[in-house]
Image (cartoon, rainbow, N blue to C red; front, top):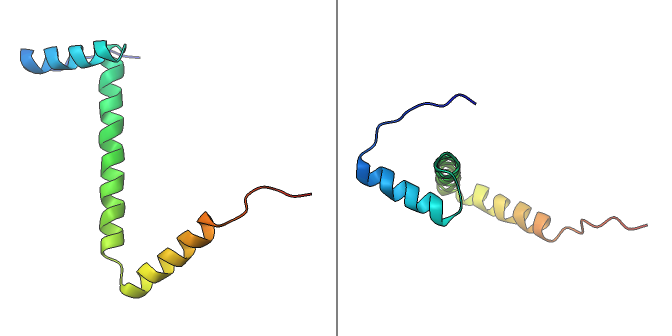
Length: 78
């Protein structure tokens, strides 16, 4: 891994270090988790936008398909 330097205010640095320390993480690990969280939030926002843009028919199809998957028997039987 190649290390780099980023510029943040001392206040932000101190907050990040305290957060990392309380989670028993290095600052780099904590920043990686924050980046992962931001990526996840962006994916959920995109999903919410796509669902919000559905027509009533598409939404009904989505609900039927979701129900089918949630009710599926996923255990193999002999």
